[in-house]
Length: 316
Image (cartoon, rainbow, N blue to C red; front, side):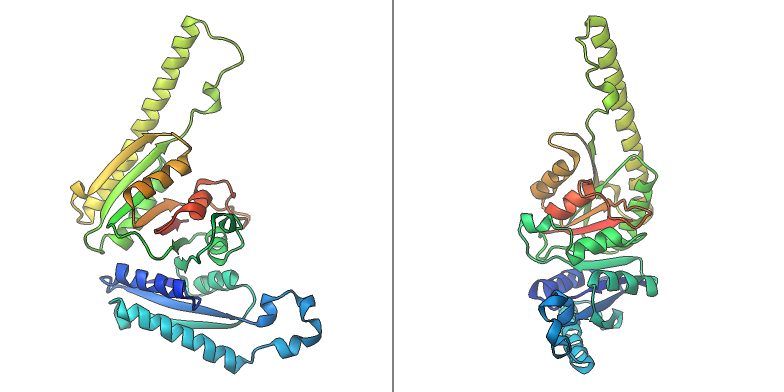
């Protein structure tokens, strides 16, 4: 039985996230959603020196934490069942005395060998989203070898899925992941989209004005680079389409699009998301082997910060 660890926080937006997942996955009888809630101590929420003299009085008892946590889990479970998700596919987990919820979420997924984590996104301004200290961002960054879904409820009404394709072997893993989780969900249409990156430095101006023959030679090299790059991406898309067709999806329900960069790869993907109101976005995430977060300026990080109204699936 495949499992998703769903981190719930008790907020109204968090409960909306649970409902979104329930509606999206209610046709999956082979899937278990493990609802996980962390109860933080008050002393974990404030700098220690602010309540140094009253640390003990600030603490919440174990029984009170458990009662509070169980109430949150029961409310989340109720929202899940109201959305149509079967009760047999729901499990509850509670962590008390949590100091770092992001760490506890990842640790729980590791403990149960769960390869996909779903977290909600609280309403924040773009400036606040630049602060990568949020639970959802930390989980996305540090959950190595796992897929992380960041759900920004409410999600777009369309039934469209964007799969951000690359001309790499990992693209097939991405397609297989999308097929495993979303093909059983009926009525979804898919778009394989790739944005050709800007010209690499080898084609930049080398510091002098080119004569006519040099300009022709450089133009020919640039054109060959574009043709070869496009051909490699189209091969990856064709293989992805074959994966979907092998799982029973009509190939006509998969569109492919290769775009030239206009504002930047991440910004152009965000433009496509906004223009077509994709409900689900599936893309790869690269995290460091040294357990460091993916760079703040990476494409995955930019889309994580700025995408709205989607289930963003970052596949590790």
